Length: 428
Ligand code: PMP
Image (cartoon, rainbow, N blue to C red; front, side, top):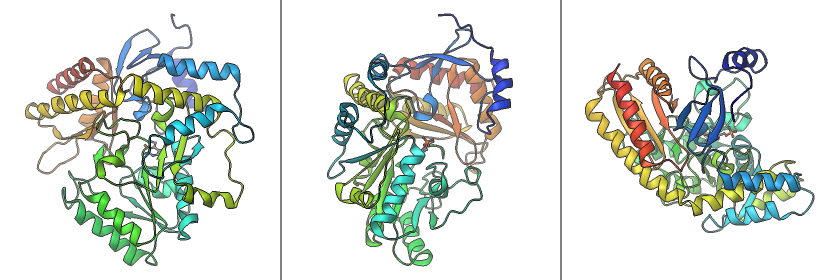
């Protein structure tokens, strides 16, 4: 149906007035996106864009996937309510189905409203369970925007000067820019050093994204997480995997990012793709660890509310039915290969990395010096949009193109993206 709402310029004017933000809207001429269908978005004039960012890995099944829409609408027609006080199948069914996706003892679920809230809860659980306070997180990670999660986040432009006690940041095991290259075990020694020199010798926990998303799609050097796992265990801490971007089959080879590292965390946090755009987050842990929350009245009014839970259950079913994890693997591997081939042609590409449909292209002015090509990245970001492809930008140096499309992305979409990127780079 034709769009009859306000224009982009009118919206921009009013948004600036009432919605102060330093993050968006992005693009010199901001997009007014009014409709979505699977991997496509439509602006006010009906122009179609290929969505290769999915609002930061948020869209798992595809924009307005009919099954998820149907489940959400059915539930909101029936009842929308808190799930704290009464019984209802929507939240129990979803918790059970979600728990079935986890190995071992990871069967206790707490629903939240966002990723920040999930990580805040995870950090508090770790502190309560262990009786220790210190938390270790990796430099360049992103975990949220509230007190503890902002503390765990390790990029200065995401941190406000509020009190953030007991958070220590360790070396980033970044194979491209890190001091030890791809030697994950060497980076892990820094975790031991921080425990030895910066804490009482014990920690509450360690939190990490299996692949750093906001930080510029950085895969942790092989061997790092298993080595850290045993160090943290010896220090009495819990291991927390932040799967907000890496979960729900996005990495292709596995349903959860941590599985590629051969470890089973004590706590896993989820958000974004869990609801395909409907706000919901979750903390999954063991029943034994979960017990610490029974010492007080812990609840969230709308964490796991019926509509979000119905959407979440539909998402799990769609991932299975549409074989989205397999698709992320096949299309993601194909796309990564095609992007890597572009390195022969375009010197500006310093690195192509990631797994499945969580990919990053780091741009540099000089491959040896790895000088970040930030201005060029912004130009490519803008021009690709002009040609109908939306991608993400990020990384500490602001020079990484982030590719995190809805998981229904096809090989043809991948070809189109690469061709548009190739053309854009050739014209620079
Ligand atoms: N963890 C990770 C890995 C994230 O990428 C984000 C959001 N970018 C968060 C946590 C916070 O999630 P939310 O914005 O839903 O609070």
